[in-house]
Image (tube, rainbow, N blue to C red; front, side):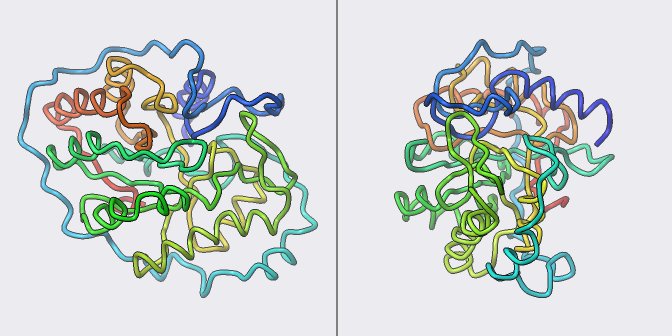
Amino acid sequence: MSVSRRALLMGVAGGALAGCRSRAAGTDPASPSAPPSTEPSAEPLATPSGGPTEAVAPTPAPESTPAPDPAKQPPHPATRAEVVERYGALAPAEWGLDVSGVITELPEGESAMALTFDACGGPGGSGYDADLIDALRAHGVPATLFLNARWIDANPDEFEQLAADPLFEIGNHGTVHRPLSVTGRSAYGIAGTRGVGEVYDEVAGNAEKLTGLLGHPPRFFRSGTAHYDDVATRVVADLGQRVAGFTVNGDDGATLRSAEVRREVASAPPGAIVIGHMNRPGGGTAPGVAAAVPGLLAAGRRFVRLSDVL
């Protein structure tokens, strides 16, 4: 990652940022102060105001969601026993949002930006922000949607519609929405996976569900709270998925007002991966994104799904 992008990420992570969470006591004090999720949080970061918001012609929708590239996949996803044998004795050296194996921006030189939205399920919220999805569709803006297994179970009809829409691709947001750790590290009061086997279960459980529903495995994974250690990210890679982090917070865990969401999204630089949430309807995410997108399109900004450029 470039120095400027790393500085941007860490500056954003200094406030509340991505990943659904609860405000339960017992947050790991060693965890970086970063993306909260779906509960009220600290004062949002001030960023430059975005561009104009006049209506513009929609961007043509992608023709279809690309199938996984076999050349980028392992010969077969590793089994649980293989993963435990391979990594069970390893001690992690990194923990947080930006660790080895986490993609935090689009490839160097890419001028587009990627909007990504998490649907956490369970205590993080199982709602469906139809206004957000409608706004993306109205402007022909593609996005990558990270869906938790519990959210899918709570919204089967909505899932089917999203999966059939070529404007969107579906990513893996875990089985029960846990930070990905091989030592039980927690983030924001949410206990992480306690070993390599539990890392496997968190990733593979929902990957199996998505494969059955979509007809192909998901290409990208994002954990609950977006926290990882560097052993856990290697497990994800062995399961044929890439870990998608973020460059810019879009909605502070679905807690920002619409004007603040607009400012964050509109100020995202070229090559940014923006994180937001689609499981908390009625908040500021949908109107904020709807206000930011026209100005970005008018300025020539292009939007992509992660699979379009990664």
